[in-house]
Image 1: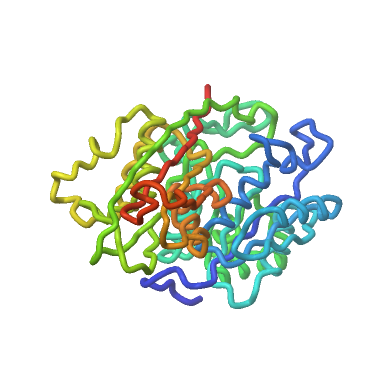
Image 2 (image 1 turned 60 degrees about the vertical axis):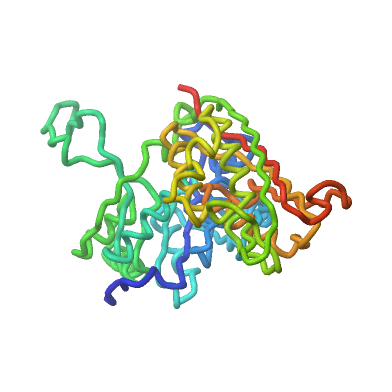
Length: 390
């Protein structure tokens, strides 16, 4: 087995999404991952998360034969950097995952295995696992159990394992592709059945490293698992910067070739500043001038995406997620249409959301005002944040 590298996670990171279950315990007459959640099929949440990540080069969804066309239609409607392959699964989850692994290209370096019934996965959580798997080759995300667990046989307690040693395992689980493929092949040869993929690696005698997951990353199994309705918070942001010679023009973290750039204490990324202001406004946290004053030399020339990371830390502390962003850039020049896709991608990654939830519009002011005279660029942004009740 080859050793993990120390200079990156490789160029071939693939995802297998297990979505071949039924709705039996949900009391549903169809595959539960196709049931609606927050206005879209449950499975769509997971596909969108992975499809928006630059690190992912291949996505395979494994589903039941009777759901094949429905899942293909769903996947085809998702904006992704790569096609989403949909294949037929087997009689068990283990068999379905194996078929998904076999559908991946042979030069895959790393594979992320995720359950389609865990729709609250985030890019931040996935990247936490990716950072660990390059060192450990097999990684499971898990959270410490909160309740005392007892082993019971025929209605009687057998023993009480120490709670401090017990973790509830989640997905995604991440592996060296060759390692997990070998683990599944051995399981097939020996007739070994397991409820998760880490157990198959353990059966090989290989170590599995645990990375802290998130309690919100629940698996929807019964109707009680469905979260209560969401609260929504909305914020509005506005910013303007002057155009001057000798400065780079940075919008949404993307440097755009132009003879003029934006003047400011930081990199003067007017778009990111407006988005940050909208986020802070939705949380009732003031504005960016209060958090990152231009009198503080530590912010001189700093990338505004780094400042956005700090604002997103406040978002996560409040158990919030970004619902969507809608921003309009008002600039007479340069023409921004060729750069909108790159800007969306950068901002979506920084916000931990799907690209389709970030909308960027570019407009002129028809030659009127300071933007029309080419003296500066203005941005307005609206952001919605979601918080679950209960």
